[in-house]
Amino acid sequence: MREFNYSLIRDKKWDSDLLSLVAAIYKEAGKQELYLKQRSEELEKLVEIAKIQSTQGSNAIEGIVTTDTRIRQLVEKKTTPKNRDEQEIAGYRDVLGIIHESFDSIPITQNYILQLHKILYSHMNNPVAGRTKTVQNYISATYPDGHTETLFTPLAPYETPEALNKLCEEYNRVIGNLELEPLIAIPVFIHDFLCIHPFNDGNGRMSRLLTTLLLYRSGFYVGKYISLEAKIAKNKDLYYDALSASQDGWHEGTDDPVPFIKYLLGTILAAYKDFEDRFALVEIKRSALDTVRLATQNKIGRFTKQDIRELCPALSISSVEGALRKLVASGELKREGNGKSTCYYRIK
Image 1 (cartoon, helix red, strand yellow):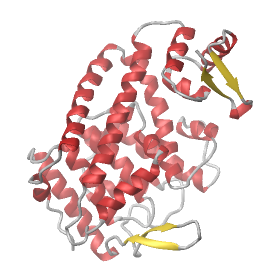
Image 2 (tube, rainbow, N blue to C red):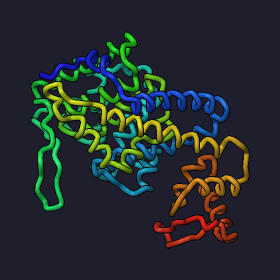
Image 3 (tube, helix red, strand yellow):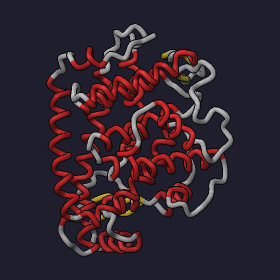
């Protein structure tokens, strides 16, 4: 069975691009800490938006979807799930909520990962919830002509419990002994977790929940305010490409995790940059019109009312709508479409 030896990772020579990503994230994390002390109340509204986007984005990657309205109602616990997709969405919401509130008291052990997986399926009858896989699974791709190809074969079911346990032990050792930079150890852990593929179902969603948990436990809180899952969902092909490039040779221990490490670090850094942009909109007290005007100036091409609302979490939906109407009337924006297909773009 594959050995999880982080010592080999520790001694690896990293290229300048990867080290630059690590340095840039530390710089942004330090700035975020200062921002949170200044305007923590307004920024709390980003948390609610991020929860909705994370729940929606991570499930959408797996083809689990419902309407925007239902997602919001489910995340805000204003409704009960109506079908299997909504049951899975509600489970993701519950696990994400536990991580947000109690990350510092959730150790990285097989037992806790199994408990989180059980909660992921707590709204439905899933006999293998909270248990490692009982049948061999495969990572495969279906192509436009209809044929399916196996891209990677994870560990066999009988190997999985021991492998998951060793993965957690090795991660805790290198983090506890300060042997490896957390921003390198975290992507390596997630990469190995996905190669083990420990569950019959829910591996992708669990990997993204664990990414958030590991980042929080290492002091990187950007996922609380900007959804990492939504960023992954927007460019999921890049996510799968990076994972595939890093899996080759994994069973033999000759894999190169660098493509996945760079992908995940790039996503984290982009989220920190988004946070800085959104902070700029709440840093100074402005009228609703001026806040929305500034938000639209940060957009290139077409954007929706929801895009602007996410940038202006302190404003109500009616304030955003009113400001957009005024900007259209003044000739600063052009409006296209009707109803849900309505979008805007700048003409000044």
